[in-house]
Image (cartoon, rainbow, N blue to C red; front, side):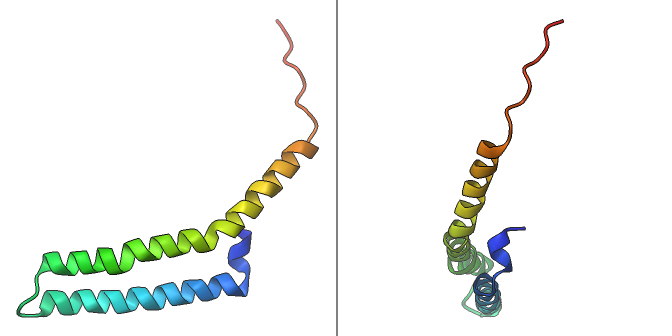
Length: 89
């Protein structure tokens, strides 16, 4: 799990994402159940109002945590001793 995900600010982002997904699912259900709606319209509502924006939002919100993890891994790689050379048979 991402270390930044344990902070309160990122958990709040998950709460907002879950609430928005709930709203979008209800919009899709209404679209599918409406006499003038269709399942295709419900699918595109779910995709265009839910999955794509939430994916982009969570990707952008997770960027600082991914950057910290990359910098930490690079620092650990520089501090680690070099591996021993392979012995020839």
